[in-house]
Amino acid sequence: MVAVFNGPEEHNLVVCTLCSCYPWPVLGLPPAWYKSPDYRARAVREPRAVLSEFGVTLPETTRIHVWDSTAEIRYLVIPERPPGTEGMDADALAALVTRDSMIGCDLLEPPA
Amino acid sequence: MNGPQDVGGRHGFGPVVPEDESIRFHAEWEKRVLGVTLASAALGYWNIDASRHARESLPPAIYYGASYYEIWLRGLEALSPAQERFRRRNSPTAGRSRPVSARTAGCRRTRSGGSGQGRPDRTPRPRPPLRHRRPGPHAQSPAEGSHRLPGYARGREGIVTALHGCHVYPDTNAHFEGEQPCPLYTVRFDATELFGGMPIRP
Image 1 (cartoon, helix red, strand yellow):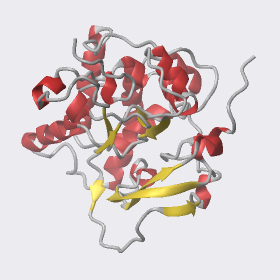
Image 2 (tube, chains in turn orange, cyan):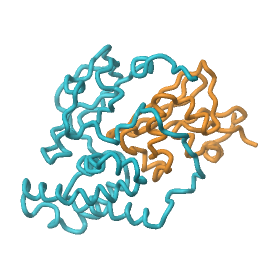
Image 3 (cartoon, one colour):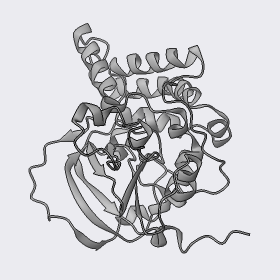
Image 4 (cartoon, one colour):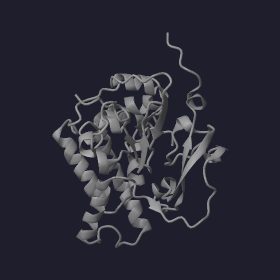
């Protein structure tokens, strides 16, 4: 399994265009949309449009990397640490993390 | 093969519909298909590459009209002939005669995810990044059989950025022709190399 790290300048998005490869040991079974032809077809060609359907808009200057698993390697996205989390420990940070953010389809909100 | 599964970059598909993260199934029968598929695979009559190939060999009209777990179920149906090929090419004691403990271990491996297809690599390899390496010649016009090269990347120029050691070669394993482990690389492509410039929307 390969972990890829999101940040202000680089955003990673995971897809399996041929089937449904997904980091089961960490994230469990993939959601239906991840396995849908809609996501698989469009994530590689128009990732910004796909992200907008999750309510995610990235700055034009952010470079997007799309990782196509296609069988052998599983990718896990480490989401960008949101502002206002300085001093939080691992457990508190983990509570902010969503499943979709670890696919690359969500941005984490600062703590309320 | 240019099968219906190879949808990466294709036009005409619709919006992605996110849903609550707690939802895993949309019907009770889907859970049973998942369970039967994993349990059947653990019997050892076929391998994961053969099961993918079975799903990807479904007629396009059926594949595109089927939900995910329906594709899995139809793939299982198609694997029965594959099982016969396996039995012809292997010892008659292979598969079914394995002890129950081996079967459940296989099931656990399947459930734990990951490909589990890594194999030892004893041959020195050049270290990435390797610039402007082209895909192999078969990538230009793939055989009819199974392979894992998406159509959108076929014949395109990329950069090898990582070597992951040797893995089972799906092109042969899917057809019960042996694992024939090969080096596995990550290749990075620019979007403009794959899809041209920005699309012009009316």
